[in-house]
Image (cartoon, rainbow over all chains, first blue to last red; front, side, top):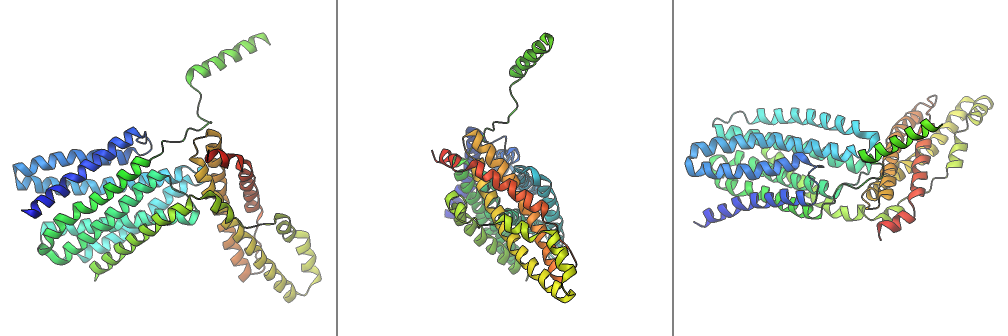
Length: 248
Length: 171
């Protein structure tokens, strides 16, 4: 009974915090800077509602939706990491292409590592074990790409914007936590299921706490003085120039 | 075996993240960053790079003496470029911090400083690699002009944002 209550608390707190993150991002006006991460947060919240309803209907429906969500989430996380790369390196005109090259190279190397990892776990037979093995490989892949990002910033002396740093740290916490849990589940087999059921959402919850904290401190995009003047002002300048030309 | 390796790597990454979060405070300390800037006396460096001097030494010294002298010169150049490299990293951090200033002019200057400093750091990294090759193969000549020019531009940007902009940031 206690574990069910604990499970429910852990299960519900994640999406609640995630919706707070999404709302905070709107309030702090940082959605434009991180549209993919905002989409990821909203996706999490919406899917929780769908998963909760499915769990009330049938186990099969819940099972299919849960693993479907996990697969979509893996792609979503990769997109968020790519967004972090473009955000961090996009601020420096000279090295925008370096960010792209770094992301692609890191992704390529980590795909190879993940394939080796996935092959090492191919002796498993059940669908769940195969999915957990795949999840473990993808998490290691994403962790590697994220590590390259942290390392490149450290080497180049790039200072992170506060919220971008929070997203990356939260993601790192979640991915490493989930990789540990998935590895334990793969090692223990079905006996590791109760551990997996509790710890997996705990990792997500911890990451969401970090995101919520950094979202509350997020700075909106700095207003730059080289921004394009409004259309009305341009029209006025145009008019003045026309006037000047007609007089000269 | 693989499972243990993954757990070990994930735990190492967690420790790395925690250390990164601790260090972040120091990275945002602009005054501390200014203190990390190392002196680079550019006239002396330019003097060291004078091609006429090198040509004169090549013709007047024995080959073995010239090679030994050129290696010493390369070591001195490596020391200079390492300093430029370190300073460029510090300037990138200062620029990135200033870029977040609510004052638009300071933010723009910070952006330019960070961009120039980052370009300098990349050029310095490349130059260091060539200088290491020159140390092994003394007949190889490294061109430092682009690195020095980039450093001068970045340093001039820093002078443009100090100290009034710093004051504006902490207002």
